[in-house]
Length: 403
Ligand SMILES: Cc1cc2nc3c(=O)[nH]c(=O)nc-3n(C[C@H](O)[C@H](O)[C@H](O)COP(=O)(O)OP(=O)(O)OC[C@H]3O[C@@H](n4cnc5c(N)ncnc54)[C@H](O)[C@@H]3O)c2cc1C
Image 1 (tube, rainbow, N blue to C red):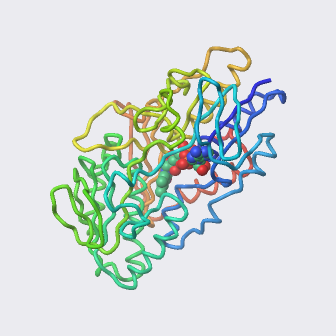
Image 2 (tube, rainbow, N blue to C red):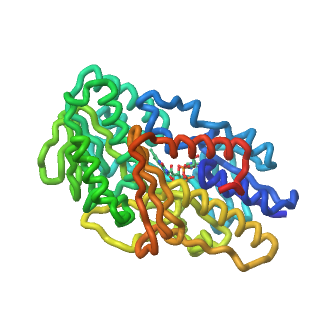
Image 3 (cartoon, helix red, strand yellow):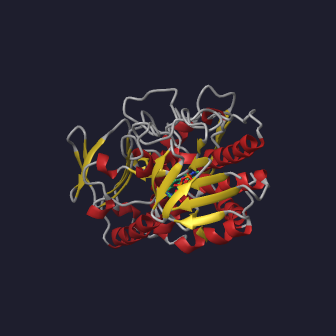
């Protein structure tokens, strides 16, 4: 009998656990998930929460019933440290032994890297966790009541550029809807070397399309620009220039979770991400797998300012499936594991642009690509809404095998 332990229960962890259980079949082997959150959260829809287009309850689903129906054990706890030599994880709910471990704990938001940017200080707002999105709702409504300059930005090393663009366009759209757009100078400040780089060295036509969109919407953009700090006056750039603003949303840099960074034993790299090979096995510990944002991805390009790789939902789901399949194979003694390196996963994404959308697709995440395209839909943002419904239904039903 073997124990499979999965840390994290969102996109990557949920898929890996359900897929491992489904493919293993044999009830003598156990699959257990330890997750800090007791709910699945469809993070991509958080960009709509500040504008009252979604409530948190509409985009979350309780995890325990999903796992119970599928025969997966669930513990709502935080993993504190991992001992890869003893094969033990210390959690806030006691110790868990494992034969196979999956690390799918997602990102930690590195506010420490940018002075004044921690939302708790009140100068910056956040959209990547429920409490932050709700607080941003209050700040947006205060901006509508008392319009002034606003900045949407990505910090150097930011890991989720696409979401920052989405928020920018949704903010612009909702300011127009509230009939105060003319009284808000809107800025986009980004470390990308050009608009539409997205941390993937762009997609053909993307730079032209984003440049045209920002121009048409009268958004002032600053590329290749590093923010040094944020305070009650606004944003100070590395150059010393102050951009006065009354509302700021700066997408932070992502690092790995404390549980990885503090476990030692060369478990993670310096940033706390897990070095894996194409099978998503740890490079040094073959019984440890990782999936989703927790994985270390090496970029095949450099940029003047640091940029994070957008480890989006599609790769997280794909990697979770590969991990589940490979653990089932190892348990059967089949050592021909499936390999699907990150850069071979297609960059399949919908960028919601506030009543408009852009579909992004290519055959590989990084260049060179055989084909790549960005298809704008200027009429209505329907695709992400459909994707959200589909994913929440699929998740509630525990159907990890579905695309
Ligand atoms: C605002 C925003 C919008 C986005 N929009 C899109 C989009 O439109 N399309 C797209 O494809 N991607 C989008 N993404 C990216 C997408 O959300 C991520 O790719 C996805 O969430 C990664 O899944 P994950 O499972 O690796 O990490 P997460 O979803 O972050 O899940 C990590 C899980 O681990 C748990 N955890 C953390 N630490 C511990 C611990 N120590 N012990 C136990 N459990 C722990 C957490 O509670 C959580 O359940 C967006 C991201 C953001 C922030």
